[in-house]
Length: 278
Length: 261
Image (cartoon, rainbow over all chains, first blue to last red; front, side, top):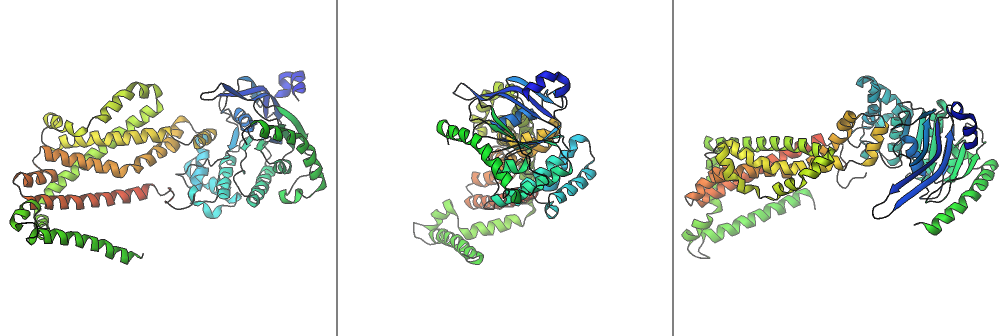
C-alpha cells in the first residue's frame, strides 16, 4: 500500500482516514541509550475500515496508536489524517485506553458529558445526550455511580460512551478489553461491533489476542517482535458482517484465517520470548 | 467484637486511668497528698474546674478567639498553598529556582517565628494567624504540588484526547486531583492551624485558650492547666469531627478503604 500512496501522490492519500508513512518511534530510556520501538511503519486505514494490529508483547503496538493520536511524535516519517499532516493532538480521533482513564471524581454521567464540553454543548443538553449514550451501552441504571463503584466491564462501557459521544471520525483502541475476563470481552466486542455498524468509523484496534482481532476486524496487521518492530503481515478478513463474536469463532473460514495469520505471528511471538523479557 | 463491648472496654481503660490518678493523688501512697496534688492535681478537682470554666461566659470568649485564629490561619494557609502549589507544579523552572528556598523555609522550626510575629503583628490574633499560616501553607503547598504533578497520565491523556482545553484540564483534572491530595492532609493542616494559634497565644497574648493555660501555669495552678488542656482536647475533637464531615461530603467519589476498586 506504500507503493500505491507514492504512485498517486497527495490526492490518493486524501482518502485515507489515517496514513502512517515510513514512521519510526523511539524513547530515550533512563540510563540507557535510545530505544527504537517501531521502524519503517507504513499503514493506511480507509474511512469505515476496521483494522486490528496484533503483535507480540513489546512490539510497539501502542506506540503506533499514540502516533496516530498525536500523543507521540514520530522521529521520522509522516502522519496524515484525512490527507492533512497531523500537527499535534488528533482532534478527529477518539481513544479508548487499556487502563482505566475515567476521571474518578466524576460520576459515569459527568464523565461522558464532559466529553461534549470542548464542543461547546450546553451542560444540560450534554447530560441528556450522555444519558442516552449510557443507555446505549447498557448502563442506564448506573449513571450516578462513580467509577470505583462500577465493575471493570462497566467502566469500559462508560469509556466507550465517553469516546463515541463526541462522534469522532477515527477510533483508536489500545487493547481496550485486555483487563476484562473472557465472557465480558466477548460481550464488549459484540457491543463495539453493534455501535460501529450503526455508524462506521475508521478503527485501529490494537490487541495481542489474534482471535479477537479476526473476529472484529476487516484487516489484521501483524507486527514483528521489538525493538525496531515493523509490519510483517497484512491479512484481509473476508468474513461476512454482521458478526457475532462468540459464534464466528466456530466457523471453518475463521479457523483457516486463524491458522494463516498465526503462522506469521507465531514466529514473532517466539522471537519476542527468546530475546525480550517474558 | 460488637460495638457495645468495644465501647465498654474503651470506657474501662479511661476509668482505670482516672482511678490510678485519683488513688495516687488523694491517698498517701507516694507521699503527702498535699504535695502530690500541687504537681498533679486530682481528677475530681480538674473535672469540677472544667465544669466551672465551661459554665462561665469567660471561657467561650477565649474559645472564640482561638477558633477565629485557627480558621483564619487555615484559610490563608490553604489558599496560599493551593495557589503556589499549582503555580510551581505547572512551571518547572519556577519550581527548580525556588526549590532550595522552599526547602530551607520548611526546614525552619516555625515556633521560633512566634516572637517575631508578635513584634510585627502585635499581641492580637494576627500574630497567631501568621504563625498558623506558616505551618499550614507548607503542608497544603507540598500536597497540592504533588497532586498536580502526579495526575494519572492515562486520565490526563484521555482528557486531552477528549479535546479538553488547558482550562478544561485545570478544572476537570488538575484541580480535583490536587483537592484530593489536599484533603488527604486536611486533618493535619487543621491540626497545625490550631497548634499555631495555641502556641502563639501561649507565647504572648491577652486572650485565647493558649493564654488561659499559660495564665494558670504562671501561678502554679496545675488544676487550671489540666482543665485548660481538657477543654482544648474537646475543642480539637469537635473541630476534627467537623473536618471529617466536610471531607466526606466533598470526596464522595473516593473508594472507601477496604472496598473494591
